Length: 193
Image (cartoon, rainbow, N blue to C red; front, side, top):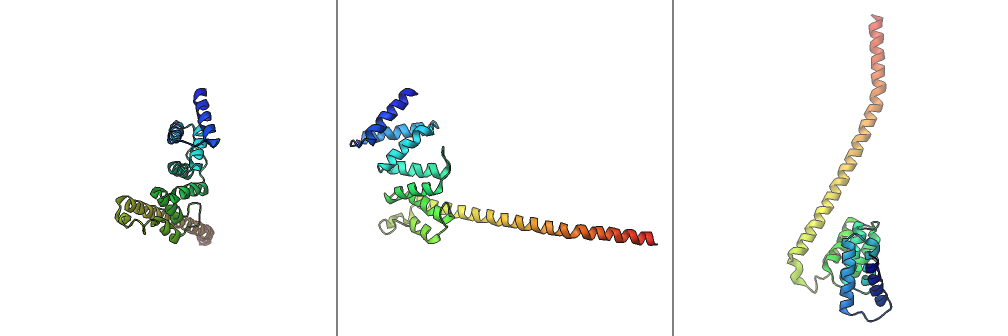
């Protein structure tokens, strides 16, 4: 364990020192970050992901978006997830663009904004018309719409349950005095005969 931390520290310090990072350095660091993350060693993986992401590695930026979006080893943080997804999306990562669009569509960490969501979903449309029928993008759109429908249904059901609970409480509030009065009146009538 100490040896792994030492190797990680050496690689990290070389990259942070501004030495020109070779592709193999980035690959090594990426493998270290992925391995540590898979082993749930978040204290070691998170600084590695951040280093890579700050160096412009799109997959690291996307992974950080995922980590913060789902709270994987960290507290869930939608604004930070959005930051990293947008960084990856700016480099053309379509999955990151779909996440940004979905977050705007659902209002995850940002005000819900259908127009902004649409903009992110179709960001590359002008340059890549052939993607309009891409099965993956169609699946993402369907998934996003299904999630929105599920959220809306859950909210509607919650409102309905709250309304029902209020109605029951009101009926009980009114019914108890009426029942007491009815029992009292019935007792008086029986006693008076």
